[in-house]
Image 1 (cartoon, rainbow, N blue to C red):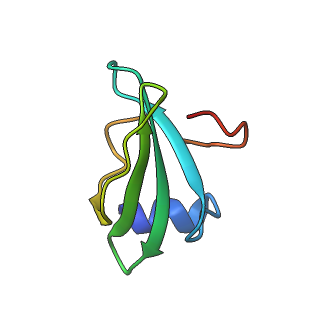
Image 2: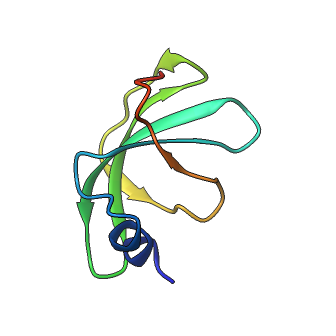
Length: 73
């Protein structure tokens, strides 16, 4: 399953914010585009601190991403 397939399966369209932790504190990203196989997103925060990055390709394989419905940073 590709990252784009995962977004479609979980109904994560552009604009969705996800939160996941790779073991170094939670990272929040915002999906900006879902392509045929890849996902574009921008980082919003890391470890609770605003850390905005430009839009880039993101892989969703290495974290247990959840929809960020709490608004956590």
